[in-house]
Length: 302
View (cartoon, rainbow, N blue to C red):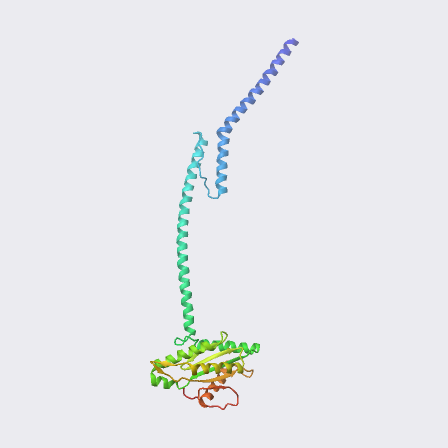
């Protein structure tokens, strides 16, 4: 009896061990087929999706291999179809973006060109608004703006500024005798001479008619007189001609230096203008420095 029980017990344990081994082998076989048929394709599909997301394009540049015709295979096929659709949409979208960028670049080039043309036109208008068309000197508007700015700067910082005004002597006679063409030529020549004698820091201007002015910055009366003497010498030596006729041209000049008693730019202008007409009264072709001793007088004709 004991021998039989021992034999049955041994048989039981052998069968038990065999079943465990068989179950393990069967489990491995099931796992292998499951991994290769389900887990592996799903893993590859997951990796492909992560790749598409990480690239930022939402698609990958290849199709996944379909190894079965079951639901996993159909899932991979659907992924491939969706991937191709997204790739096609991506390429179409980028083509449209590239085309739009090309059009935008062309529009930007046109806009930049138009902007440059507009800036040139505005610069030209600004120049025309502040430039005398005949002499190409700054005009009255530019002169008044500069005089006001420099006057107040002199007030604030106690800087020297001197104003010089010029009239062409007997200008009406030149026009009446030789025509307005001769008068225009004289004005152009005076403008040329004035530009030659002023410094870059000064402002020469035609104020209208036969009247010219020069704002001399950082200049005292003595320096202004030296400037005027050189200018008058230049006028005397210059050959004014029109239609082969030699023209006799002279200047009457008034000089006034800013002083603290002057409260507005008009006061400085009045002082220089007052000195100018004193030069005319004294015989023309000369300059006068303003002083409060100059008697009041009526303006004389050019």
